[in-house]
Length: 307
Length: 140
Image (cartoon, rainbow over all chains, first blue to last red; front, side, top):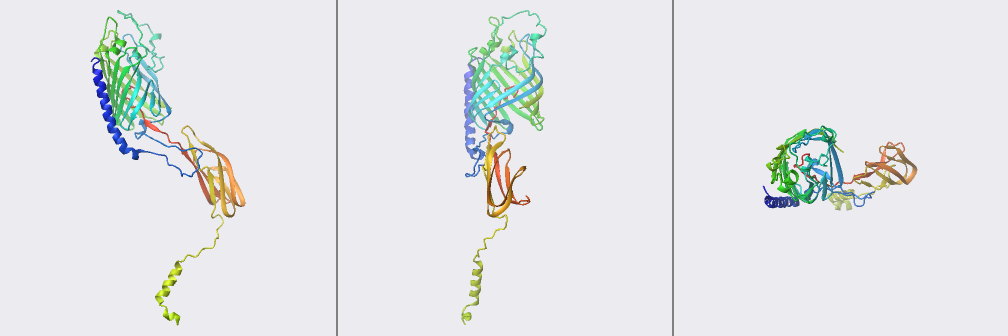
């Protein structure tokens, strides 16, 4: 899959966004009067020590709503790992995983992602986002996306790697950011996400498509959900990370994944979280001489505490 | 005779009409009646980051006749202000609270409630929006 597919995907994605938002906006107008939730207003002549204000604005279940203007922090503590497909790289331990977010009226920050919401309804949201390039995590253990306490399985303090039969010239993979439109939606409990991104930090000028849906399987005292999705990376991104100049040059890569996640509330702030994800690497990545696996496996089990 | 010329039914009708005319009652109030209590402010609005109100509350009362009574706050036994044979009174106090405050005027024995007023707490409503749905994210 080469570059020409991107205009098609972008056009299709934007078409879907506009169609979905047109429907959602029409529904929103019809529901607006009924959905408005206001704080009970006091008598006009009542004296107050402060001015009263009101406003709600989210009709989704409480877990899907977030207060505007507040920072949110939670942390997952447990055990897990993410396999590293790059040769001689050790698996990435997952021990402590903080998660921080902030939502303004329009802007938001989710860990290393940030964005501006263009339009939002109960059914869907269209935003412009910026998100870091993901693949760097396999080359730099200290990458911020490997958010963990790296004291348990750090290869720098372990035994030296086995001698390599063939060495490729080391080269840096810099921090990159990708930006573009993101469409998220929810219908009948199924939530979806579609990102159409372009690298904006002048490192590889590549394109990336991220798409996934989450389907709830069990909703009782705990919740079990299945996520399926894919990541498509253009040849420019594939070669920036996995290419070997003069030795290997790959094309675009389509990486599908499936994830099962289970969570259960233990108290008001504590939650049990477990997940297992299998991501299949496309041939353009898996065929690289610096890659020795066709997949990335991620598992984690622990407890999450919301501050 | 005149009585003989007036039909009995008309007499009964006149008597019934007279029975419907309201007769003003004498302006007499029993002790404790007609007492008015007001507090200012009547509302305290907490911003999202505020936990409690800290305001000076002015309470004032008036009665149609001299009364002996006490001003008390529910659940605040340490606050009590009494008057003896007064027809009006005011009291100001600084108070810290997170829930509605109920002021009461009671008789000196604190047995009967003569009037009451409530200072309400309204918490500023938070504005909410949808959390970003990101099933692509591994930890979402």
